[in-house]
Image (cartoon, rainbow, N blue to C red; front, side, top):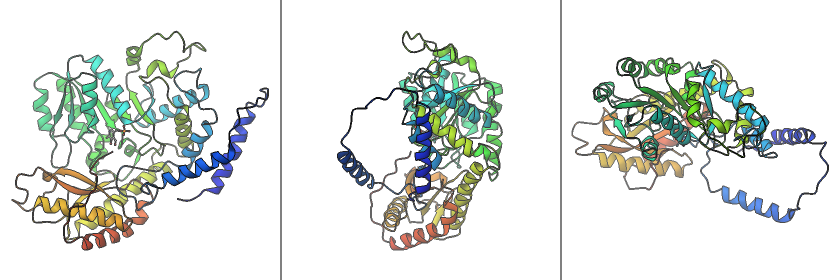
Length: 462
Ligand SMILES: Cc1ncc(COP(=O)(O)O)c(C=O)c1O
């Protein structure tokens, strides 16, 4: 972790600037706090926080975790001096305006100028909101998502009392179009969730084909682009993902998580609707919140009540520094992560010790050590995961269908449908410079763990 003294100095200047805006207020004495005790507790907090994986470092190449950009950290902390609440203009006037501007920039990245949208707690809440709208527009109809869609779609549907079914995936972990077509023929589907970057492998559902089916069967399409949404800006996508992102503006709703690839602290998801008239579904009366103006209060178009204005300030500042445009610095950072994933994929493919799956569509690579049986492959994956961690390289594990690994010798998988594999999300731009180092540690961990032993490791996905 680099202590950014310069940015801390800039931060203090910004706090002074913010304070100046309130200089006309009469002085008051805040209830004092015990400074010594505060410092002690802060040190204790720092000590407790040391018990974490080094998420900010390129050798953390496991789960979908990315450090916020310094501007996001600083702008968030700056906003804490005010602690605005973006529920209503009464609670966060400036930060509500910043939210509207930042969300409009995200919508414009998807080609939408006239839309409805706002920030929320994260991808789960954003998807909940999108499916809540979908359920109201198609009451009694089913929600479909692929078997590799994020697990929360099923849970959200159950919360909303909407029936959910999953559609099988093909050998590349994308929604199987033939299976979808067959399922649609029954005529009871209201909404199809297209995942634009699955959590486990980064696979992108075949949007042009799903859109062609919409022409025939008339259903809503919601894009879960929580993780993958920003990849529409990059130049180094392969054909399927490129053609999918090229059609995203034709969908009914989109979820994207600034707290994944958008360089934001946690607590920042975003939901967008192409048709702004869905805002009428949120209509409610509140006798106590909206009294300061007739202008839109964001609480009138969001399911949550209180929401952090600091998230909006951080996102606004980040997008001012790194605009969401093709060929810009933000897009180039994403391209670097994707190039890192392609480079690691090439190395694992060229090495006899590993069994590879399909190539990365975005910046996630999955691979497994070779073994005589699925249980041996799984045990070896766990052993390498542990040996790599001992050497300072943090990967992730994932239980994936054996059908994703066409190189598995026939008969090896027996009755097993899934096996434990290694997974690496190379989402930091610095990963590109670290691929060789990551590979060296991985190779040494693989050699050191030749004798399989069961090691503990979480396959939980974020
Ligand atoms: C595709 C996808 N959708 C939804 C989610 C849930 O998002 P959150 O963790 O922000 O609630 C995730 C999380 O990884 C995801 O990858």
